[in-house]
Length: 428
Image (cartoon, rainbow, N blue to C red; front, side, top):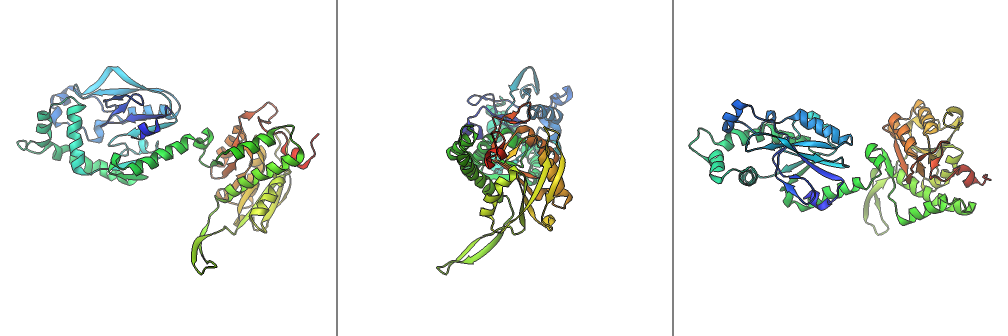
């Protein structure tokens, strides 16, 4: 249902076992993938073999395939033939590299190595009688067994133990149900729970709509683009715009970035009495806050911060920059109690990331925890994001757009030129 609702080629489904494999968005192929082939001795006593036990699966092969998919490579997924109880030697299912991989199966949470590959873990909670009915239907329709055989295997009372009670139910109790504790989301009623399915679909759509770097670095936030934001970017990037217009539209964009950055600060619940005598439950702003601007361009963002946070303290850092190698600290003036505060680091353009890293290192030396620093800018180059996020993974970056790249002069492309000169009117 998730795949069909998304209807997006950037999403693929991989089956561990026990379900349908989608070879395309519209074509269903009834095949299992990661069961290991039975030995000759196991095949002779197949009715005594427990296909619901973790040892029935080739977890190493699953890890290899998932690792290659996550690294952006296409893979050939094996196909298991339940009539012959071994893998098809000449058949496989090719899965192309995709942005979202949905891995499903009854025991995908059992092995920690498989769990560690997952960004989101969903447990489908279904009643026991429904599970049994589905199992009988699956064995008859998908695995080529006749009804009498299935009933004999699952329900005969002539056997010493019921097949279902001997293998399926114990495996569920011992391996499947305990893995429920690892789930981030638990869905009762499965596909009948349309609300849960819609929420997951919307979550995936949100991820697909993110910039690729936001998928790599969860601490990077790009404010949601609108025609207003796109229009303001068009204006400030125009080399023929007048200085007053450049300042006006830059200030509007900076205000949006600052507001978004403030939304990442901690809040506490607060109740107030309204003029009608009613009680309103809201939130109180973070009190321990300061701004730090990287001179000189960062100073253009101070007015927006002051407009949002009355009386906020603002520190300054000046770093000498010569091409891509400048790391010389020239000047710093910071609040004495900065180690107790959350810091909004201000610089409208993140290019190479070297100046930003120097400023962040200084803040950390002053006692500011890395996770209390939020770096605000208007545009970011991918190189700068890589540089900062790899070194400071707990810091947050908030920007309004991520540009294409840096050129040989270390300027952001398409960029907007020397922001400080254009903003303060010192350009040529």
